Length: 102
Image (cartoon, helix red, strand yellow):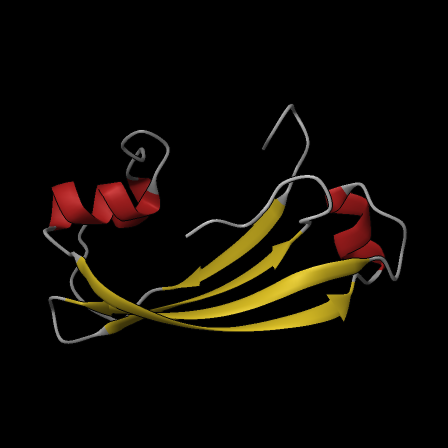
């Protein structure tokens, strides 16, 4: 959220590894990745990403405060971890006022 407006919808797909209590964990600094690193010693060691410009469907447009069919950025990420596994992510980004950095 930036200025109380949603700018990114993110879905994370975690590997089937031992993360005891993860679903009941309060995130450290509201961060999944910081929680994985500090509580489970799971670190990101690399990242690949693919970017597409797409049109926002009705639900995504509503969440991001846009008109339906407004252009958004779709990002697929594959994070390599120190546990010889991957975390996958899909992001839908409204970059009309704020750039995607990282």
